[in-house]
Image (cartoon, rainbow, N blue to C red):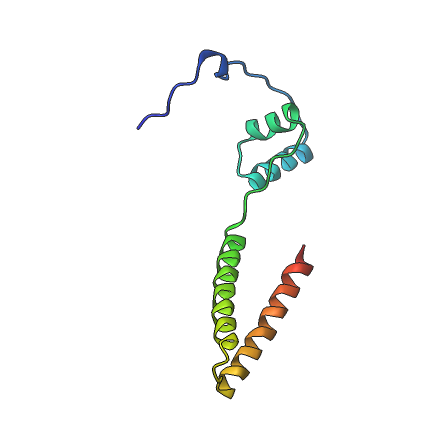
Length: 114
């Protein structure tokens, strides 16, 4: 399926070039990588919107978020079971406490990372 054609006014027909040094070029390349946009889109965002483009979410952070959401769901299920006043075997209680310690450590590492 082809991309719909833009109205004539919205087409980017004018080309403008400028010079930059190595350091500026490297900065632009990093911004492009950081935002997952082309150099033209980064420059247009900086010039016309007066802001840097938003960063794309790294795959690792997406996977971390998904895993944390799964852990949160499991914790909610465990809490529901504990709150039902059913007896809990001591081995499961010990495992839950170990999980809680690991989760606290993970949260501490994530918070201190930023």
